[in-house]
Amino acid sequence: MTLGDKIRKFRNLKGWTQKDLGKAVGFSASTADSRIRKYENDIMAPKNDIRQKLAEQLDVDISALSDISIQSLEDVMHILFFFEEELGMKIDRDEEKTTLTFKNSNKDIDTMDTLSSYLYAWYTKNKSIDPDDHDSNVEYRKWKGRFPRDLNEYWKEQFDKLDNMYSPLVCSIGDTLPPIKKRSDFLIQIRTMIETEITIEPDTALIGANEGCLVLTFLLSEILNESNTAAVNSFTNFLFCLQSLEKYKVNNIRNMKTNEKGTQVSYIIQCPPLMALKGDIIKLNDFFKNKDKLNDFDIEMFENNYKHSLYEYDIDLSEYEWN
Image (cartoon, rainbow, N blue to C red; front, side):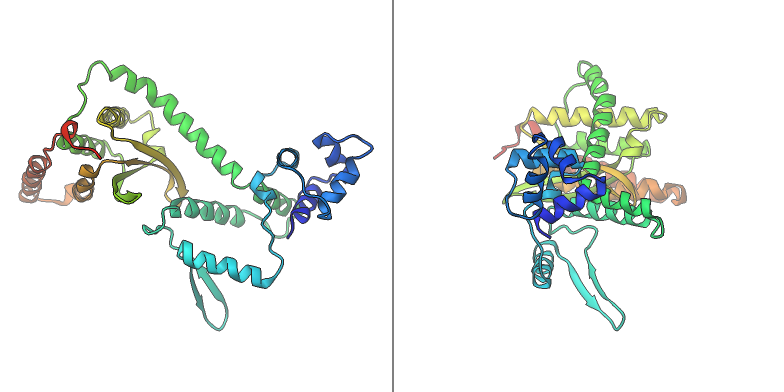
C-alpha cells in the first residue's frame, strides 16, 4: 500500500471527497481536489507540514501516513524476517495453520514491553468488533488509523493522574523525612509497600554497556487507590526515596504498559548496587503472600534471614563511586 493508497483509504473512511479533504487541509477551492488527487495517485508526495495537516484532518496518527510501502508478498516476507531477527518472533506450522508468535515478555529485547502492550491493545480491540456490524468494522479501521495515538494519550492521562496525586504528597514530606542513604533503607521501604498490599514485580536490566538497573513495576490501580491510605503513604515514601537517590546522581526512568494484568508503571532505577535486591524482593513477595500458611518457626526463620539481608546490604549509596 502506497502513501497515496493510505490517504485515499482514510479519506473514504471519513466519507469525504477529495475536495473536502483539500479544503480542510487549507488548499483553495479551485485546487483542493487536484492536489489531493495527485497525492492519492502518487504523482506528488506531500511535504512534512502538509502530511501533518492531512493526519490531523483525517484523524489518524502521523505514523499511519508513513512512506513504508508494502506492495508484494516478498515485501511481507522480509518484514516477517525482521520480526524474527529483531523482535524474537517464532514461526510454527501444522496441517491447518501457520502461527507467528511473540513472547509477551522478552528480556533480550528492550522494546518488548511496548510491543506487547501494542499487541494487547490490538487483540482486545479486535475481539470487541462485531464482524457482522458495518459500523463496528468502520470504527475498527478508524482505530487502526489512530494507532498508537489513542494508547499514548491514555498513558499520558495516567501519568498525569499519578503526578497530580503524588507530587503534592512527596513535597509535603520533604521537610519531615531524612533522605535515604543506605541500600538497606531502600529494602525496608520495599517491604513497607508489600505489607500495604502493593504488588511489586522486580527485575534487572542493562542500559547501554555497563549501566545496571533495578526495575520495579507496579499496578496503577493499586497505587491510585486512595481508599488504601497505608498504600498511598508507603508509595509516597518510595517516591521520596527515588528523589533522594537523585541527589547521589541516580537517575530513574518511568514507562507504562498495558496487558492482561491491567495498566502498569515501571521505575527503571539506574543504580547497580540496587540490582542485588531483586532476589530479596521476590522472597518478600512470597513471604507475605503465604504468611497465613506458615508456622511460627518458618516466620522466625524468614525474619532472621531478612535481618541478615539488611546487614549484608548496608552499603552507603551517598558514598558509592558512580561512573
